[in-house]
Image 1 (cartoon, rainbow, N blue to C red):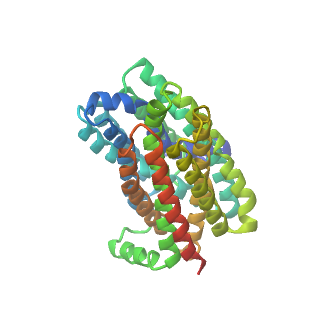
Image 2: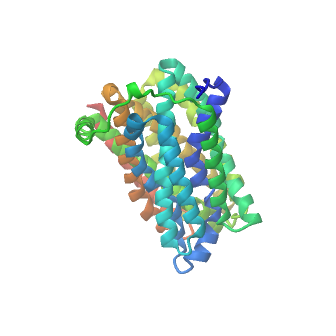
Image 3: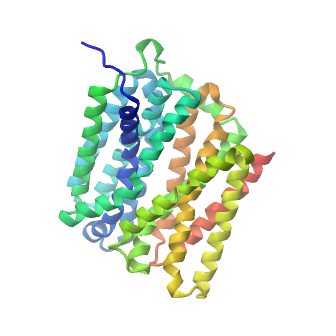
Length: 398
């Protein structure tokens, strides 16, 4: 059998961006479908429909813990294809689910499968590039990936307007099938058999203990957990806030696109200031700013001093700042965590990401379920999480 030739730089970046986009598409395209899911599967408790988002994230967090070590043992392509196959099987189950409980179980499995193309594609890039060259490739991938949150809700809304919400899962199946065929036919395996590490439970446990023995790693895991809690609580609540508070359900996907595109300024700001100011300083400054802005928004909303004409524009600006916070904190927190763990980078990335993601779901679910038709529960949750993040980061100074 003829060995596959390496892809051109452009095609490789496009393929990696498509694999990474599996998670974003699976979350953001579902947001416009939440009202229909609530009406069809949970009419007595419509807020439970939000769990379609967080159940997927929970499964993704669990899958993250296994994706890296399994790809080290069995190869990159095999594990991406296996995870994508599981993702497709779960999407089929979602399509036929006739109750919310069955849908949630299938979404957990779907998230587990989606973790493999997301995590293993990063390992695949590490196999081919290193240092500044890898950073350059990653930046191109992220530029393409950044467009997905802006487009996905619009795509979901278009699908719903033509057919029912179940059809979105057929789109997921088609998307995953395309990436699988593309990867299988075009991308060579990047981890030769001679370089693979046998899967050893004992070594994994030992490595995990070492990862969690570093105080800075534990601090950054908690900070990432709280930050992701803000993100997933916001994603769970946004559609309901637009529908019930601002009566803008139909235009929600368009506004979500505006928020997603404008929030990319966070990446630009971080690239300019992090080298001069340092990772911890940028993170602390960001948490301080978000906490102050959220408290101002919360007080003005609860007290009624916010003019109704300004309520919606203010909410949009606050949402942009909140999404920009992710770019200004999560990458820097990961970098802080990896500083003492260069010799365990793979397992360290899996452990820290899995713990932070799963923990964030446990934080986000109560905030989402507390939605009362206003943005107040979400603002309270963001204020608490960002305040705790700021407090936790004080321990990183010592």
